Length: 90
Image (cartoon, rainbow, N blue to C red):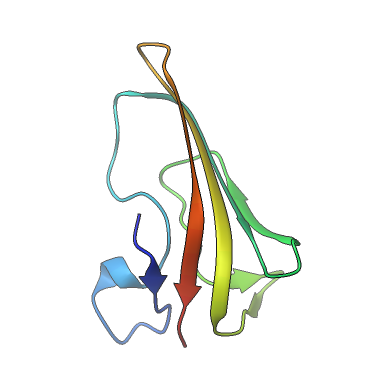
C-alpha cells in the first residue's frame, strides 16, 4: 500500500486511488477501512477491486493524514492485519 496518494487525475493512474492494486488469488477475505483524524470512518470495502478515491458521502476530502486498517484472511487460513497512515494530497 502506498503512503501518499493524490486523487486529482493529474498523475499516474495508480496514484489516483488508495488500496491494493491487482488481483490477489491468495485472499479468502479482505476488508479495508479508512478513518479521518477524528476517527470517523470515511471508506470501507470488502473488494480488492474497489479503492478509496478520497471522497466521503460524495464530497472530496481535505488534504491530510488518514488512518487505514486492512484485514485479510489468506486461503491457507493465515490472518493478516495491517494498519497505518496514508496522506491525501490535493
